[in-house]
Image 1: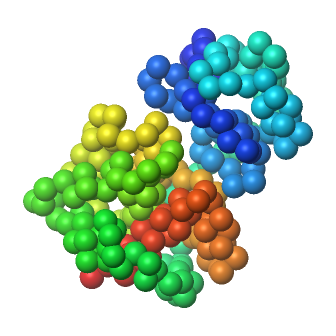
Image 2: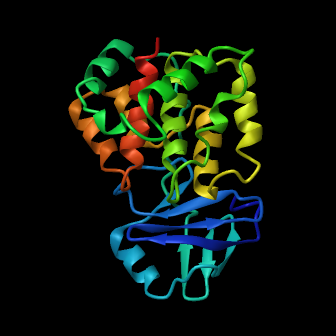
Length: 241
């Protein structure tokens, strides 16, 4: 993206970083690794992000080269940065151990509302049926925030599908097409498109690589509810009928 885009603009700013986006809604997160490593990120230290945020504003333009990101008030050189190469999630995780760890958590607060177990179970069941109407339209974009709860749940569902495939190819194709129709936020769109390719943040993949209470608790720390919503999607999919 640095090589193929001349410029991007600042989409959103957080305590630990900021997002830049191009006119195709492709996104790069620039910030610390407090919430793990993201599949579309440039990781910098806390001191640097503190300095950057002193002048950074929403909609600021940044110029791009293969060597870095240039703003009127700062320059990030990445030509000597360490590259973290993401690997696609494959069917090698210990599903029984993951399920045992995840089942220790209480999800009764989802018993009422848009994402109740009965509704979500029906959606997950229909994902395995290629004759069913596209079931994920209900979840996509439902909720508030940069990554609505429904989208985080979708990410959790897709993670389990990469570990233990069950979703009909037709529905995976439909999701890829549907998510591109501005039905949710730019951030969620990027997360879901990468999840369809088997690429997830390290907070999610850690559960499969080293299933433990510690790895799950670290996922739960992500965002105000994003981590918990993702875990709920994982839990419901692992316990599908």
